[in-house]
Length: 172
Image (tube, rainbow, N blue to C red; front, side, top):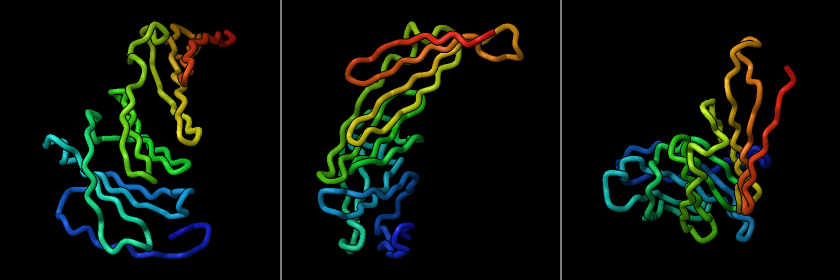
């Protein structure tokens, strides 16, 4: 159901009997269409990966689309914006992006998972969608020996075309 219009559209069944795990619906501004995408995690056992794409309200059946990727398809953090779907993998720092208009895939490596900024503390990647592009906010902190386990300082890697590392000291 479209929460804005209240319109309900039934999607056709997927003909292939595959395990599906990752699915989403995104809007393509250029064509003013919605597209549904289903990723098949078992395709990782083969040389090529694939997903199924459907133009919602237009197509009568799903299209199988193959793509190359080294990103494990156990993707968790999904962002949809301006006709793009971005899946960020939590441990490999890879981002898989689908351009919904052209139905093309790109894979982007994130920064080294153990940068100087990370030290020995916790690292948390937060991706911010800015339309076609993503910015990465990497929160890194060293655990304190006191203050109830609160972090005493945090370092943030802000990625984009010009990544920078900033250190913020918390009041003690």
